[in-house]
Image (cartoon, rainbow, N blue to C red):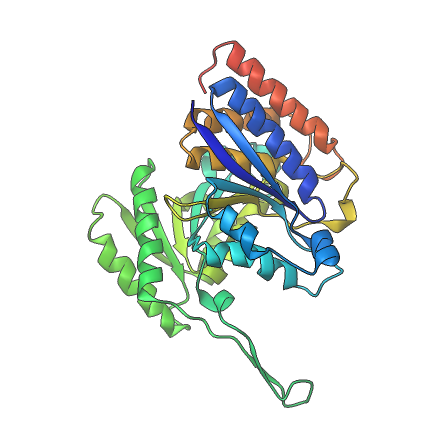
Length: 358
């Protein structure tokens, strides 16, 4: 029996609550599909930092490097300056583990969840491949004449040939494996001339994938078309900053941040999976937060680890519960956090017991 060693980092706000439900479903999937879980809990987040003055100590980070994957809840707390915890924990995981792929499915599970009139699940099934280790996110800010009328703030967008090529190649491989075999590069090469690197590499690597239909879109046009004609997209590859923006737009189209899961991936190495919503401190400890995104993040993690039948079963159960209205709303408080987790766990077992295809 294969055993997967998984780090669990609940983090801040609603993070521990939704992560607990994700773990509940992982344990049920392990029972049903015959694999083992060795779960390692980590306390890192705001409370831990207040007590110890540390974010992730080097000793723990060395241990994380040896895991198979990490399930992350949410990071962020109003007691700290915006970005301090996020960069110190999430940023360190992404950058120091070289998790260069941010993978974000944008999938509509039920028509009533989409704010766009007339759009059905068959109209919205996109995967965004976001570069995850470069761009302005990796550069240090510079301030001149801070606090004066002449203040200047600068933060460089930096792209490397290596970073650009590996994310584009990953996206081509993914697009080639999907039924529609279409890949769209999203950039702003008409205004940000550094994006010419993305254009050239996209064309060069694309010659190796003649089976993939290629397309280009400026990011502003992409946002418009995602609302007007989301069925026009299949797989998207884009920069770190633009990927951050368009995936939140995509989350709204599929029903909200509470349903959106993502992976921070380095193929063949430890990778981190998370719901893309924030820590929502106002709901902390109330058992009101929607855990679907955390549950789907767990399914993504299982798929990444090779447990594809288990991952497919979890996603299908979530889809069925949303489409049928048994999970009536994605709004906080519509159902208790633990009730949603229990419902998904029961349905996963019931479907498996009657021999449904995973």
